[in-house]
Image 1 (cartoon, helix red, strand yellow):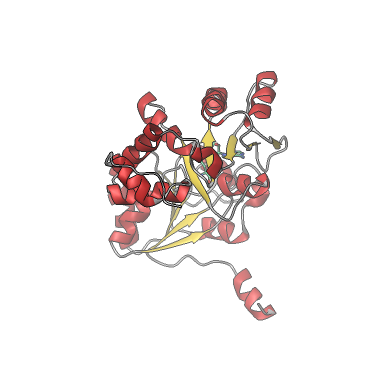
Image 2 (cartoon, rainbow, N blue to C red; image 1 turned 120 degrees about the vertical axis):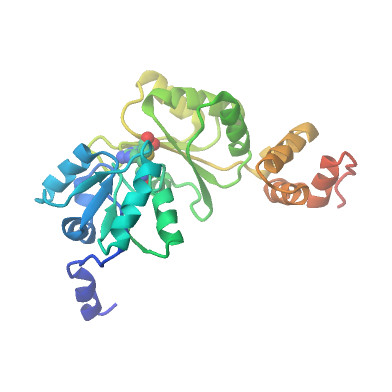
Length: 298
Ligand code: SAM
């Protein structure tokens, strides 16, 4: 990038008419709000935000109190979307922010972006911090392939189903959890994955008392049994090894494929997906599912 291009990028960002801007805001440290985000939030026609009081404070910190705030949270998404789309169609520019981090990542946003795209409206992201990727890159666990689970379901049956998929996942898995539920989740994980599975809990990222606790489930549980979990936590769980997956019994393999089928996969796809995650061939798994399994050919 030459100097001239840098100058152009540093210029004040003038919001364009009829555009929905998805704006990343800090996950703790106000210094992480980008100059582009600041400029946009000051100059946009209106800001849709989860909590108007919380975002009002952010705007006051930027020295602006004039940009109108429109509440947009989990409980009014459906009623608000038509109003926000009408503003955009009327030529107004709209910023979407959440209480912290990137809207749409375990925060409201996805439905509005989808509705705007369906109407042919432009959507531009002003990127910013996200707890998931911030925790991942500080964990030292493989980041070339990873998956994001967000918050696990709280309903017992759905939660069990989700955990049973996570335990055999070979990619690094990122999970969000509230501090008062952290120990429950850690006990579920130790039961399923064993104490040696790599785990890092990133706590209070970007804040004064930021800390990372690891390196495995056993050590993390020990730490939080002594120190009551407090603040915001993101878990980065190491993936299962093929050896761990090799130890699955036939009925566990079948259960796992049936779970995939329940989630919309065909038997063929379920066998292929599990073959990628275990040492078994797709043919063996497919046959196992249909109860005609022969040992894997060499
Ligand atoms: N949209 C946000 C993002 O981009 O990261 C996530 C919002 S979600 C409602 C809140 C969860 O994110 C928290 O319960 C915690 O798991 C994680 N989180 C948010 N800020 C964090 C921080 N500073 N340190 C660690 N985890 C954080």
